[in-house]
Image (cartoon, one colour):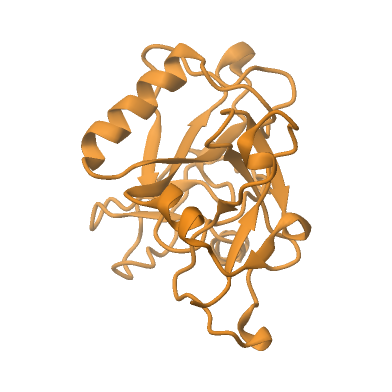
Length: 212
């Protein structure tokens, strides 16, 4: 079996302080060091530890590689990573919060509902992109939950705030995405195209398109 990427929890009393928190890959690499190109040096992501539940900030330097044991594989069986995304609400903060959670994936719709309920209950603690407020959402707040497909994408902070609604080219259909609020155009934020109704993440290419 090829090597797999993983990180560890830094809390000594957590079982995942020793046991690997295995991260997914789109195409599992062979035992070739030239193929171990993920993650890139600027990668960082917020991950909820599957043991103690604390949200951890992990960077490219924290990612290790190993061949998974039978015990490692059994801990992952039937589970997938989900991305939870929402805007920090207290004091109209607006910081984009994203973190990834390893959960049972047998009934995706039910898992997504449970993740939203837990976030509104404020069960997660730890670090997040917002340093001033706890990791929680209000009762009526929009919370997006996505099944992570392949590699866990990194969190990249917002770099652009616009003064008027604007549109970019949708990477899914090639048409204009339609006007969106100025605060939506932040790298990593997901927008819904008003032509094809599919969601896509804002990238640096979209930022350059708006600046042209």
